[in-house]
Image (cartoon, rainbow, N blue to C red):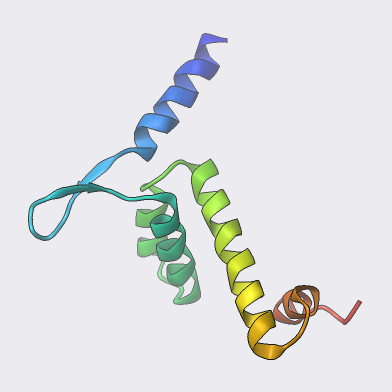
Length: 98
């Protein structure tokens, strides 16, 4: 039981990790910044940036951020294309129309 608590606290503390910016100021990356950096690195096939972004927050937070980014992207594309989000999502994944 204490291992679970220690693991959870460790992940939480790691997700609050502070990094130095170019100006020397310290800042914390939030899960949406991490998700945006991770997804853009995936799109550009940049493993180093993917690895870096995945250290900014906990794996659970990164997963939530990527999921939220995907939802927002599908909604935006659906509005632009005047289609349903279901059609857009299936098209992006190369699936046949339902």
